[in-house]
Length: 61
Image (cartoon, rainbow, N blue to C red; front, side, top):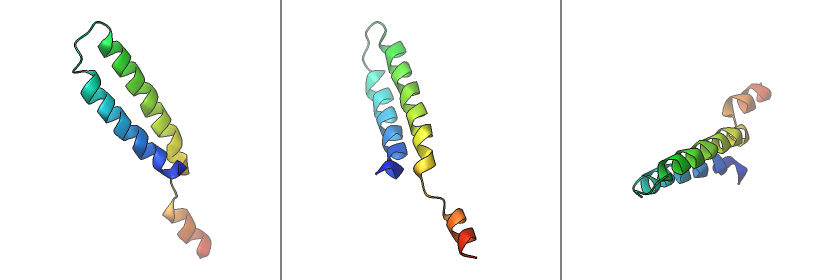
């Protein structure tokens, strides 16, 4: 499941930016971009769980 978290966080970030910036209230832009930044950091963190096919093929040789 951890290998898919990066993609999930990227999708949530996109949805947050699409819907969050359509709300025209005070501070909504700052809050939306702040949350988007935190979600992108989380997505970057979970990229370490994506399997690397190159490492697997090098180990077999």
